[in-house]
Image (cartoon, rainbow, N blue to C red; front, side, top):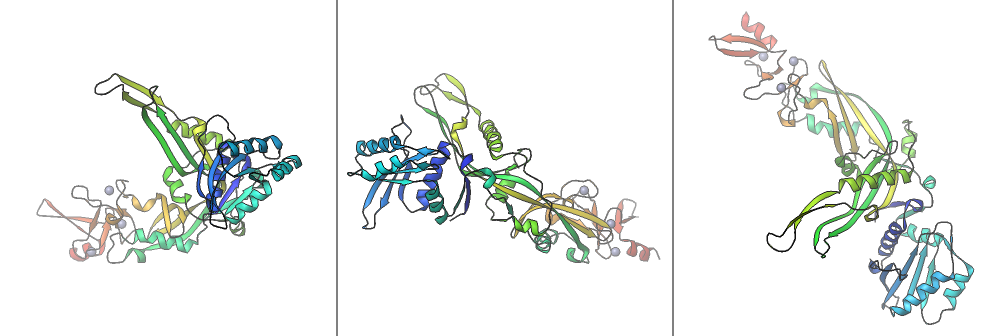
Length: 416
Ligand SMILES: [Zn+2]
Ligand SMILES: [Zn+2]
Ligand SMILES: [Zn+2]
């Protein structure tokens, strides 16, 4: 079960209902689902509870997200009548507040049905048992960090890529030396969101729908900018570690400048924009009239269930290959890297990117070049087969048109 940090202050009523749904599922209740949102009939979640005698009992759950507030008797009375209307036997009120004495008394004296009350501290305790760390305010939420790797481990992973280079007579491993690393951490919020929205025409025909379930996004904790999707995806599912690992390594830690609520607002706005698009449809069958409608989810269709404060480490690895220096910037998780910038992928002559297996490294100076039929920016010495770059190769014309390239040593030897 994935451990989750939950900040109640950041959740709106709908998000709190989603949290309760997830909580009851984790607690092992069956058939947990949100009740269709009709006029407020005082029921939010429906589920089946398996009793110790293995009987299945349907339960109506009322969610009340009222941090620091008191739930009074009327809420319990309303649930009581809903229970009777839907002819079930059990109800439950779950709240982020607490219950008044009157409410508790009322729940106790009802005879025909059973109503359980779960207040904030019960909620925290229940959550703890199934992997939820629940906090009231954003200030209480502890920051975490993504994996802080050992530099030697990063070097080892990165070398899977450099080892594929074409290099002769020495191997890339012998030529490329790991000089050291730098690491920086940046504050971010890791947001888990869902979007549910169907778009229908006035006649009830569905023309577009958006369903995103538990997707993750990283937002910069200082300016709210969203990380590229591939970065969020790469780091998102990765296990986090307590902040003391960052503190122990004395990595400077810039403060968060935006609150969770500011980040939530900005991200919802951005998600609305990303998912807004014009949809073309035709009225009626065949070649009915053509319509265009801009489908845009509203902020209510977007739910952000978790917003975790997390530091994102970014690594710079420094290398030297003979006379040439290289640097590589990566995000890392255990046993895997995401390359952000990689000096090794560029041809030293044309600056174009070269595929990992096609990079030729000069065994004289360490520069990298590529060799294609028309654009030869790297060579092999005609005599000894050494891999050499354009500036280390010496050209010798033979038969007027034929050019041959040699490494310095072979050229000298041939001239003798
Ligand atoms: Zn090139
Ligand atoms: Zn060279
Ligand atoms: Zn040679």
